[in-house]
Length: 213
Ligand code: AP5
Ligand code: MG
Image 1 (cartoon, rainbow, N blue to C red):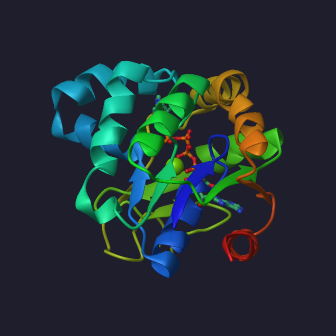
Image 2 (cartoon, helix red, strand yellow):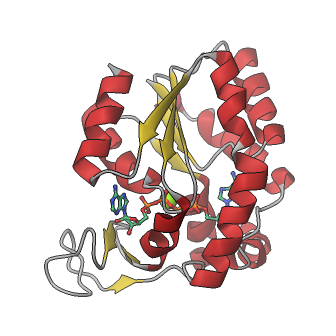
């Protein structure tokens, strides 16, 4: 299964990615997660990416595209993969198309999670993530059993530095201008499945499974 997850900030890409990994056993490639890991480890890439991410801007294509191509060339992606947060503009989509056609790989589905803009700020600002295992929660919509503590590994939960109202608003603007045109791009290719992401997490996953069936 070769899948792309598309959708605005806070749409539920990461949340549904965890469900998809469990059911379909595909590697989850999130460019946002890769950048955050590099920031945590203090690498050169992390230092360059950090200022863009904290301002809610896209990290430049020259730092992003090669990273994804190199990850896709690893052996665990031979039979399938799930891209989350890449591509994010037309340049990245064309780069990916070129990489895939050169490697004789065809996409199965682009899962486009659509959510009303008014819900996105609450979703992102209420998000809490586990510092250790990366599990995602929401203070209201998907709370952990013990406040501030991860259900999976008992570590402390934290907030992403880009999950404040001002930065999320900017990320939504960037999504509308740079990323949303990809909906048309993949619709024309006939690979898109539009999913109503306004529903409960479990119902969204039911619809994704139906689209992938
Ligand atoms: P990235 O990490 O990809 O962030 P994003 O696209 O803004 O998306 P999010 O991770 O914020 O949201 P999500 O859709 O995963 O939602 P989640 O499932 O967590 O990118 C971060 C930054 O990195 C970018 O701004 C950019 O700077 C850089 N970057 C990354 N990729 C790049 C690229 N290709 N090119 C250039 N720069 C790049 O859910 C959100 C919350 O809602 C959670 O709390 C969850 O519990 C809750 N929730 C989820 N689903 C539901 C539901 N159905 N009902 C109620 N609550 C729900
Ligand atoms: Mg995410």
